[in-house]
Amino acid sequence: MLAKEFPSFALDHLAEVWWHNQGNPDERGVCIEPLEEVQFRAKEFKRMVLRRPERLIAVVGHGTFFYHLIRQSLANCEVVEFALNG
Image (cartoon, rainbow, N blue to C red; front, side, top):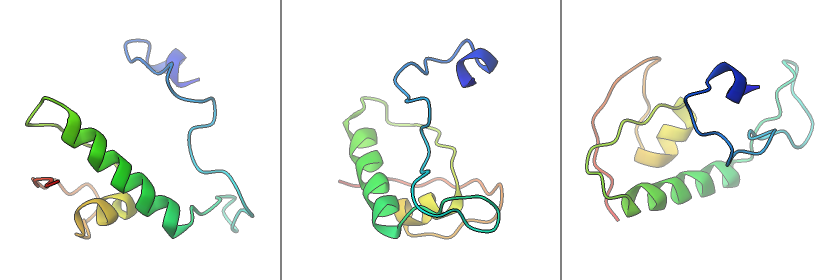
């Protein structure tokens, strides 16, 4: 579905369902990702970014993920500049 909407992006590395969808959904129908999994994803993402040759990378995401990545709570649509250190 995403590939059809965004044909210029390479999305073939993503599984058909690429978000957390395990466990019991809450009242909104959303399966909440366990804290340990969010922390693991942030750690792996940081490793992946640090291996890249670029020194300036734009990252778009959600507040909970950024909190675990940079230990800073962000406002909705807030833009910040930060450095990842190994």
